[in-house]
Image (cartoon, rainbow, N blue to C red; front, side):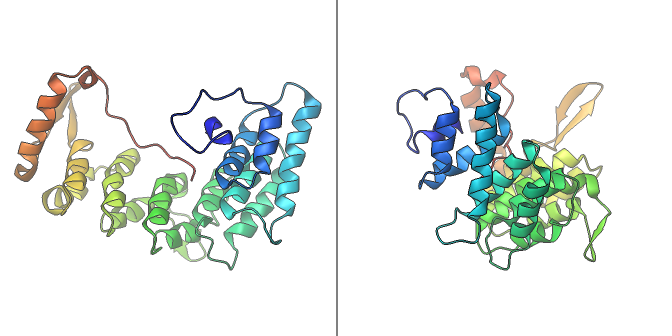
Length: 269
C-alpha cells in the first residue's frame, strides 16, 4: 500500500520512507491509485509532530468537502478518507459521509465498503447494500462483497429494514455465483463461520462444480477433520485425484511444502 503512493508500476526502485508530505501530496493527486492509498494510510499512521498530524486530518476534511462537486474524488477514495477521519477521532463527520455514500442514489458500486466500515462501528444499516453488491452484474463487486460479508456475522439474526442478517445463507448462496473466482473463495469464508454442517454444505460443490479450482477449494479446507489432535483429510473426489497427485509430487521436491497454504485476505479495493 505504501508503495502505491510513489508508483503504480511494479519492479521499480525501493519505496521511499513514508512522510506526511508524501501522504498529503498523494491525497491530492490526480492518480486515483495514489489518492486511494493515501486516504487509507492517513487513518492508520500518526506523525510525530502534533501540528503535522493535525494537518493530515485537515487534508482529509478538505478532501471530503469536495464530495458531490465536479471533479470530486471517486467514491472508493471518499469512503477510505471517511474511515480514516473516524480513526483519527472525527467520528461524527466520518460516519455521516459513510452513510451518505451508502444511501447515495448513484449506483457507485462501492457501497459494500461503506457497509463494511459501518458494521465495524456497530451500524448494520448497510446490510442491504452488501446484498445488493452481491447481485451486481460486475464479478469484482460480487467478490468484494463476499470478502467483506463476515463483518456482519456478529449481528446474525438482527433485522435490518425487514431483512434478517444471515451471513451463512449469504455465503451458501454465493456457491451458485456464475463466476468461478467468487465460488472458489466461498469455502474459506464458510470455514471461518465454523458451521457444524460445513462438510455437508460443500459435498455437492466438490462433486459437481464445473471448475476444478472450485472443487479443490471445496475439498481442501473443510475436508480436514480433527481426530485426537491429528488432522485427517477426507478422500478427494475421484475426478480430481490425479490433479492432486501431480500437485503433491511437485510439493515433495519443494521447500514450500512445509508452509501452510496462504489464505485470501480481506483487501481494500
